[in-house]
Image (cartoon, rainbow, N blue to C red; front, side, top):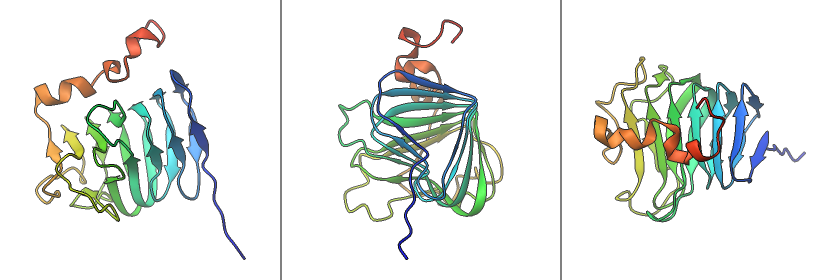
Length: 186
């Protein structure tokens, strides 16, 4: 018979925030379609592009469990677009070979900062998978990650290890203009 999977959540509104939520799927889990989104202390589990879409999202202190595949597939297509996925102070672990992200658009942007990366993260870290374009404008980066999967020695040549100044725009809710719409204590 035919086997289909559905996403656990489709987020297409602007200024959406999720606190202490769990998202589960057997495949792609979170379709971060468009808009600005904030995920705080959430648990996200799936496989093959666990989080994907064209949204601008910050994942703060979230746990991501991957059953083989890629954590994030961002569809940013131009440097003028604000789209991107940022993971700050989280934990990544799973089963099988895990990629931090893959190129899904010509300017795909995914950043992991101050995040624990388990040994399931492959040494290359990132993949283009079936993307056919240039890697020149991809922004797949890490900043001060730790754990056995954080060793950057064998990372793909087009990924980046960010310096403090380069990482600064991704470390706070300013990435999603959160001070304009998130609750005051952020």
